[in-house]
Amino acid sequence: MKIKKKLVGIMLSAILGCTFITGCESKSGNEESASGDTAKVEIKNEGDPIVLATMTDEESQIYGEIMKQVLESNGYEVDSSGVGTYNNSTLPRQSLQEGQVDLVMDYTGRGMMFIKDVDSSLYQKDFETAFNTTKDADAKNGLEWLCYSPYNNSDGICVKADWAKENNIKDFNDFAKYINDGGKMKIAIATENSYAATAPTCIPGLEKTYGFKLSEDQVVVGVSDPQSMVAKGTDGVMASHCYTTGGALEALGLYVIEDPEYVSPIYSPAAVSTKEFAEKYPEVQEIFTEVFQSIDEDKIRDMNKRLSTDGESAADIAKDFLQTNGFIK
Image (cartoon, rainbow, N blue to C red; front, side):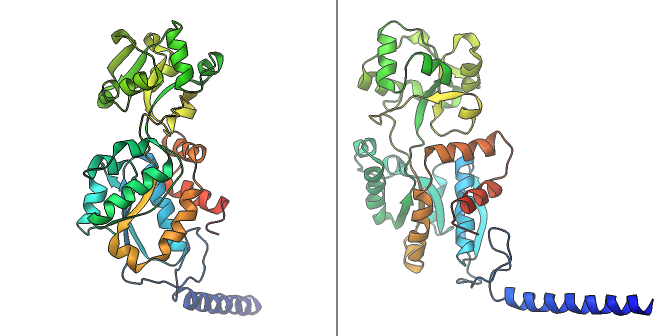
């Protein structure tokens, strides 16, 4: 009994000693890195956290977590309470301009929407031109567009992947030939996306650019779940409006018809900050650029699917992506 008590006492002393040592080490930096491992990381902005916010959609939540975890792993204290809270596209830039936040994730196409005297055709060329157009135009508004991911999350038209393969349809040139040769078609559009039937950057623009014409009864507006209708063939629906990197597309077995002329303008995810933030932490642009450039359309579709249909958390998805690609340990 005395021997047991002595051994227990020795073990407790050892544990307490280790706890004291590791506790002293961790207090000088982050107590836990973004990957969940205890590590000594010097905090560069202790008591002055970077305020980060994003919109509520699946992609914005994932990018918000990616930005948060990358910053934390590089020694920055982050207030991420605003990630996944903005429910409309005007709030990110409004919050930046009012100094409520330091950093947001947004899309390059916002320049076409919110900045005066911007040539919209510059969003129908290539990723870099679209990004730089917004970056240059927004500089006068005190906003800094830091970097972007090289893919386009814009309006699109999706069909069943098997059907596209059977009919040799890869892009809208193929789709136009199919329609002009008398192929059957019925496109469904959700009520909240009714603009897709009338906007020049959606169906009317696709018709004009690629040389086909749909009749009124081939476009149905006002359904609740058009993508599921395509997957099931409900009421003869063969295609639907979609956002090109939506998480449900793969799960439903749908294919997004390619738009090589960028009729639907380029919306690349981008990190945007206030001018003050960019001047205070210029190194963040370099840190983010490498991460954002590594995310392509296939990767984000997979991550969106894992969030929207597989039930994984945005934090876990971001952590897995960052660890897999060597951005955090």
